[in-house]
Image (cartoon, rainbow, N blue to C red; front, side, top):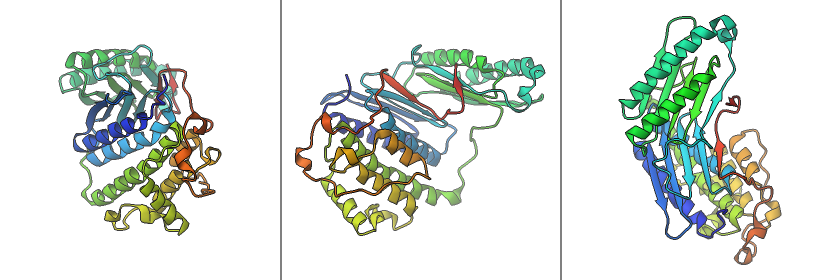
Length: 359
């Protein structure tokens, strides 16, 4: 059953907001709402090698991709640095799922294009995966490892989700590592599993360096504008997608008034005192206005919204008319966004692995 209940948006937003606050504090969180229905269970976690700032940014990026999953009642989003999942049941203890667990492998590059090195690399990779798995099991579910020496160096990271048991973590890592070995002689491989994540690469990809102090202030401002402004855009688009429903009339009126006065960035939190990327803020707020136009035919599809948020070169159109026209009588599926992304499966995967092929 698709999530068309009027409480879905409200429950979903509450879960995501709670996850956002807890991820900021401790790098991971789980939360659920089951009253009123429908049930929404959410899990978010950053890899433990990330700094607190990078963790917040990764989670914010994952949230911007959530609209691509609608109207699916569940989704899993894997990024290189964090994981976000929502579903309609308690999945927190799950570790392995034969239907949705997947491995992505790249092709051999550089020296690995030489067939004579394949067996040497395969042995080295197998040893590295064994080491990082063993270390993660004894280190609370996280480890990084390096396999240096020889012609090609290899690096690996293993991460279990905080909600799984030690036993479940071990089972997930064993299975992920077993499948990841089959990526050899590919120069990069990722195992994206229900209870864990494992990756190897011939290039060092994990971060164990301390966060530079001089970048902290600007990073916090970037996070504030990313989460604050994008929240307005996503909430607006959720309302459009599920049936036109005003989430905050006062907020939308304010943004529209500032847009007409050609000072839309005045809608950004005044606490930032103007210290934020104005172009980025303007674009995100304008997307929100597009999603709240009174006529559904003028609203962008979810795929277009995602493209606008992720493609800096995308030309964002101007709203054609003030939103909220006859908003009190606009309800029902007939006003759902056009060209919606509908999945025939229960879950959707979104990964950062467009260049890789699944195995």
